[in-house]
Image (cartoon, rainbow, N blue to C red; front, side, top):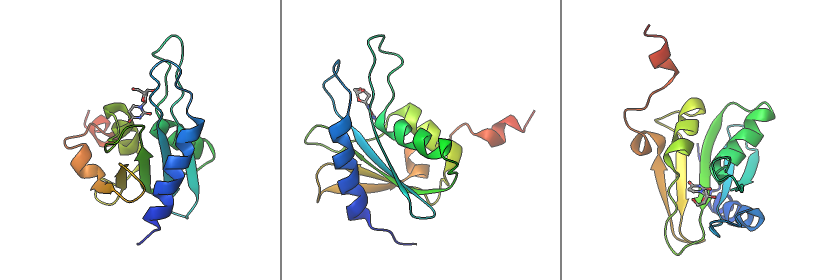
Length: 136
Ligand code: THU
């Protein structure tokens, strides 16, 4: 199914504006599209103790999941540099919990017109998932 990827890219870039990143100065925004068409945005939220920091992607996922959403189509992620922003490993693992490896699209944004579309299966090959827990 098609979706408005340009809209998602713009929403991710807008979400970046709310970034709370006083320690790194590195702002990130994400826009997560559900199967039903709702978009949840998120930004990175840092902390003086560093490790409680939450990435933009996980902020978007946790907002959506906490509202009852479980099915997702795509996420756009926009960083604060003049380069493509790829999700960190922890965020890829969170995507693996809820998303189809074959179908979920990750849009790595460089600018409003330059972005790469990748599938989760290519970003997290050999993932550990809930199916592994059923092997015991
Ligand atoms: N960050 C994200 O929000 N998403 C990523 O995928 C990579 C890193 C944030 C975390 C931290 O606030 C800042 O970028 C620098 O690592």
